[in-house]
Image 1 (spheres, rainbow, N blue to C red):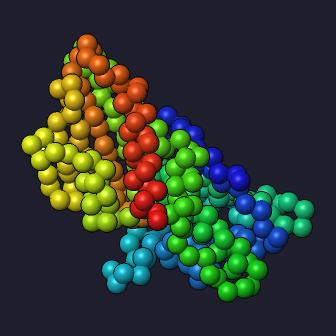
Image 2: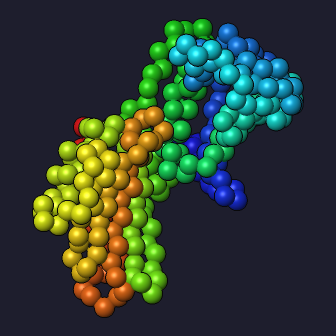
Length: 266
């Protein structure tokens, strides 16, 4: 497995490597020729492989092509990098025996979307290999299990604990593999909040209720990466002095959010 995740300033960078049993020139064609690129890339993209050239994307939804990127680096047959809605995709090709090694990086802001991006690119590069090999391209959507394996591998299942004079706050953010309307009844069951404790309830969007020790719990579902809803769950409590320990609370929430993810992926 070659996938890794790191930060560069305030951005997140996904790095992957793949080896193809095909010469570098053939892989370059599959990266730059629109009719070949569209067979494995998420959209039809057209551009001149020259730094500064515009990149147009067509998602096949009837809206037609739109300029949403720019080539930022290009060395014929070796390096291609372009932006895509502010994100940066970089492909670097190396000769490797009788084949070619691809170094790929994807730079973006949404750290908690990294598992979706990684699992999606795994499928894309499987399709690229099939294209190069001249066999039917059957790579499909990533599975929920594959997605959540990347969540664990990249440490995206860990929460954060912040403390201050006003108390502490535990926060978990998780990209789910099911839409909000599917996740909502599972959340309500896991929350098990007595009706008298509920402070806010907006179906498939938000649930907030009182917690022991004078605190509050809030579940929120919002737009994610396209693989499902994005969950943000927080528990806050007033200044220390009660029986609750923030680290213990965080450990409990990690188990609960993991249980939600397991149930959603079946």
